[in-house]
Length: 171
Ligand SMILES: NC(=O)c1ccc[n+]([C@@H]2O[C@H](COP(=O)([O-])OP(=O)(O)OC[C@H]3O[C@@H](n4cnc5c(N)ncnc54)[C@H](OP(=O)(O)O)[C@@H]3O)[C@@H](O)[C@H]2O)c1
Image (spheres, rainbow, N blue to C red):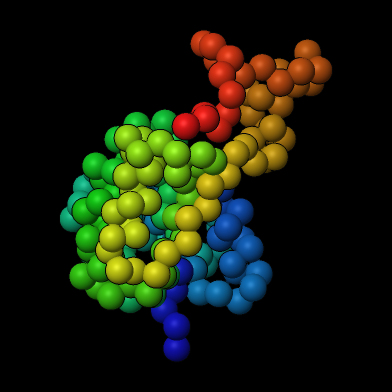
């Protein structure tokens, strides 16, 4: 029998929807969070949750134990995502992980120095099966929270940006 899918960032905007969708498809899911007790209180169901903290490498092995697939995602705004993801990927390799779906960002394949690209390359070199997902925004970002308030009151989407440059950047 296949092991569970470990979903990193399971309590976040992206991960929580993924957990729901995988559950709907009958997959066994293990949600990773720094605070499983709080997440369990919020979700109010029998979701499998495990303690996981990028800053506490001792949580990696127990969180991965028995899982055969991982959804890997960086913390929002982590400009050194490779620092914490590399040892995690190394632990996945030690445990014989079958496949990692790795969410990075649109255009990172053209930015070798960027942390998310370094995560991609570490995964590519690991020998683990992988899929990189390189999205732009998801609509859920606009359907709640501060952006929705701004959109409703101004009729526009305002995004902080110092200069206008083409994206993805040209080589
Ligand atoms: N939302 C989008 O439209 C979008 C689009 C493209 C890419 N992304 C990328 O996807 C990632 C997640 O975005 P999101 O919108 O889902 O973020 P979010 O809603 O802010 O959720 C952040 C998640 O990160 C987890 N987290 C924070 N610090 C952690 C740590 N030290 N160790 C382990 N987990 C930690 C949180 O889990 P706990 O607090 O439960 O520990 C939470 O599940 C970001 O890198 C973002 O750039 C998002």
